[in-house]
Amino acid sequence: MRDKRFGIALLIIVLLAIALAYVAFIGPKIQGYIVAKQVEAQQNVVNAILDVVDQQGYVAIGDGENSVVLVKYNPSQQTPQVGTGTNEAIN
Image (tube, one colour):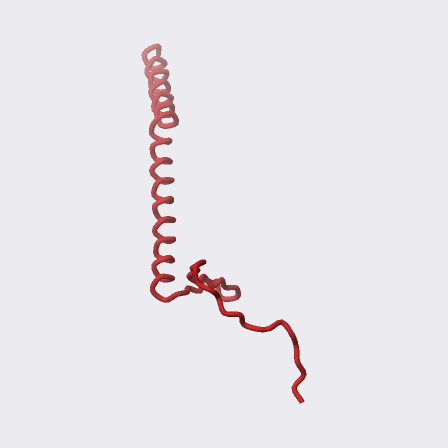
């Protein structure tokens, strides 16, 4: 009876030690790896978008209803004006 209690207590201690090791050492390593991979994936996506903008001059990103168009911007170039800002009636 005493050996059975000792065995159960030893098993509980071993399980708690494993849980503590996971929480203290293994879990943070896994989370760090996951976060590093997420950052790497984000950088890859941004670089891919920038590559498309470099090749085409623009890229449209959307979800079907809404979209955003990213265009290449060069501040040294003058942008042509689209309108004069006045409305003239056509007779």
